[in-house]
Image 1 (cartoon, rainbow, N blue to C red):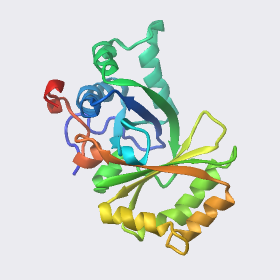
Image 2 (image 1 turned 90 degrees about the vertical axis):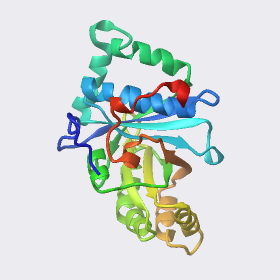
Image 3 (image 1 turned 180 degrees about the horizontal axis):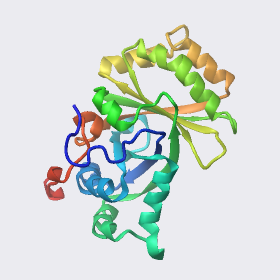
Length: 258
């Protein structure tokens, strides 16, 4: 299912993408409201004014990491698209985009802060429009953050493409993408996998056991001296991989109802 609404292709031109990857700490019981505010209330503005598409908004599963937390990923048309986005935000020496003033005031009551990274995709990573057209969707997602020696992130991602991706695909699990953290020492990488169902996740975890299907990938990570952590997450109700389209203004509803 693809989004055929006006402007559906904005930000989805041919060429390399750059992404903003966000780990957002939510206040109290506000995660559902925050995800609604981020998707329905912010995405249409970002798309119209910044040519920025939403790759995903996910709620992390607290038993597997920090909580309550949300992962956001935004897709831009390369470094030029990111620069245009940041120039729009800071234009004229302002410290905030006027379009965000009301939105930010509400968001500030729902979150306490977070950590952002600029990440660049591997050549085998599909953009969000392609992922939606291909029907990539997970009941649950495995979100993996890797650390290696400075300069070794490209080697890890190359091994991910050559070794991990086919082995994981054999389990019925599809790659959302592989990403190198930019503006750093090339020591961090991120992999996201779309797992079709909970039995599929169990199979994935068991595949890491000694002698399991991911043995070659595990050995490659050991050779690279990699350290990593895996966190599980689920789509927001309006996440593009869940709906097959970008969030729209027609998706808006009062946050008090969430």
